[in-house]
Image (cartoon, rainbow, N blue to C red):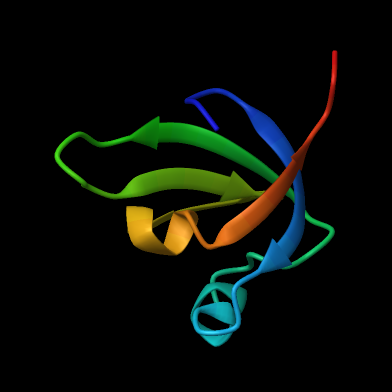
Length: 69
């Protein structure tokens, strides 16, 4: 996904599930990508009313269903 895109969280990799669920990242929730930092920096996302950041390696383990407009 690119900055500004959004979709519904479909699946989360098992090895990061506990970590990201504690941030509010759960299957079925809407996720918006706000900013991806360069040089493998963090990804800033919002889920519901909460905004958080996570590593790009964690972000790659989250499957998103993107709406077709």
